Image 1: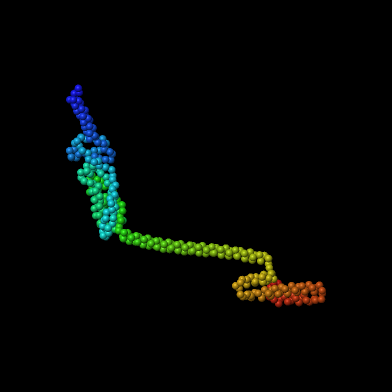
Image 2: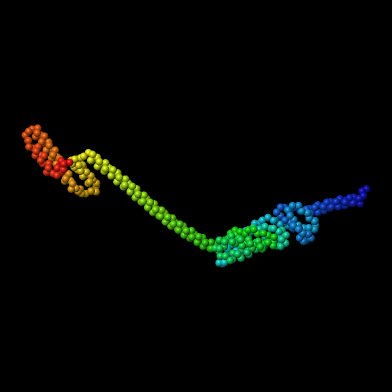
Length: 336
C-alpha cells in the first residue's frame, strides 16, 4: 500500500524545486542587462535615479533596480511640418525646418524634459517666428544662412539643460503666397528680359565696333597695297620707258619711222565705246608733212633713176631734190 504522505512530500519537493528554478531564471534575467552600442540606459533603484548604463553587459539588483527605456545617443534628423510665419511686411509664408540634434546626457533627457522631441519642435517654431518676424520677404528668402545660424544658437542654448546638442538647423523650404509667387515670377521675367535686351544691345554695339574696325583695317591695308602697287607700276613703267628710250637711241630712228609710229598710235587714242570725239593733235599736220616729204623724196629719187637710164630728162633729178627744202621737216631730217 502506497504511503500518501510520502508521495505528497515528493510532489511538494518537486514543485518547490521547479519554483526555485523559475525564480533563479527570473532573477538572472532581471539581473543581467545587455545595452546595445550607441544607446544608454537609466537605472532607478526604488524609484530614484541610481546610475546610467553604458553599452555592453551590465548587472542589476533584481526587484530593486528598474531599467527605463533606452535612450538613443546617435545624432537624429527630424523634419518638422510646414509652419505659417508672418514676416515684417505682413506676408504669411510657410517654412519647413530640419533640425539635427544629439542626446549627450541620457539622465537629463529622461528627467529634465518629458518629451524632448516635441519640445524641440515647439521651440523651433517659436524661435523661427521670432527671427523671421523681424525680416521682410526678400530678406527672408535671401538670408537663409543667417536664419539658420540664429536658430541653431537659440536652440542649442535652450536644449543644453535637457541633455541635447543641436548641431544644425536648416530651412528646407520657404513658400510665399501664390499671388506673391506670381508677382515675383513676373518681376524676375521682366528683369531677365531687361538684362537680355541690354546684352543684345551690347553685343550689337561690339559687333558694329568690330565691323568698323575691320573695315578700317581693310581700307588701310587696301590703301597700302594700292600704294605699293602704284609704286611698283611706276617703277615698271619707268624701267620700260628707259628700256624703250635706250632701244630708240641705240637704233637711231629717222623722222620717217617716227612719223609712221605716230600714225599707228593715233587710233589707240580714240579707242573705247565712250569716246564720241576724235581730237587731232597739232603734231598731226607735222607728221603728215614728214610723210609727204618722205614720199615725195622717194618719188623724185625713182624719177631720177629712170631719167638717168633713159637720158631724156637730165634736169629732172635736179628739180626734185630742190623741192625738199620747202618743208622744215625735210631739212631737219637731212641735218640729222
